[in-house]
Length: 86
Image (tube, rainbow, N blue to C red; front, side):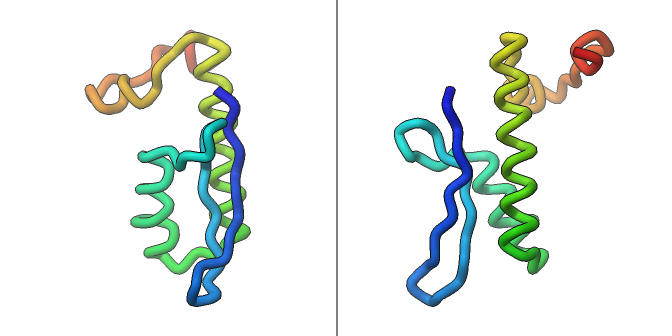
């Protein structure tokens, strides 16, 4: 899955950053987390951009190792030690 971090300016002039897939659709959980935790915590758009780049790396890592981190976390399951060291 090809992901990218997109920046845009809202109608109010506020700058935003979101993580989108190859079709340009925002990813649900990263967008929710950014909206509730980071934007709600008054983080700067550059901080949010950096956090989304880290999440983008996590998605690339899970694709490379054929894992589904969202599914695991939604079930309350953690990564195994050998997966963390991958």
